[in-house]
Image 1 (cartoon, rainbow, N blue to C red):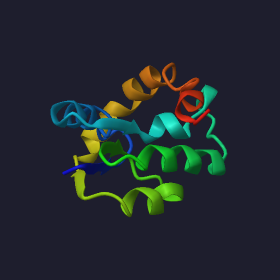
Image 2: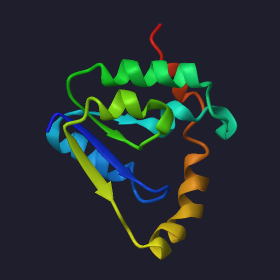
Image 3: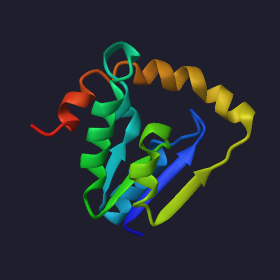
Amino acid sequence: MKRINVVGTSCSGKTTPPRAIAARLELEHIELDALFWGPDWTPVPEPIFRECVDNAVSADEWVIDGGYSPVRDLTWSRVDTVVWLDYPMPLVIGRWRPVHSERASTTSGAIASAQKP
């Protein structure tokens, strides 16, 4: 287990378990939401998103969260382990508002730090 993808619906907890897995296995954690969303929750242009993800998954070992279709070819072709989070819909819906309110302030500027100079 050197390249792990954690997938699930929005608000299923795709960020927290990968952080724990990455810490436990001493692997890099790649958060796709942080690469996809720019300031004010605006998506970055797809070519920039793909470049950021391609750079991130070029490493030999990582834990990535999410399953964005525009980069699925880059991520799924490299994973050796998939963790699928499948929680009941009432639980997922109950998590929606707190997660999105909390994360709105954390995505600004994430793209700039993920791109190569």
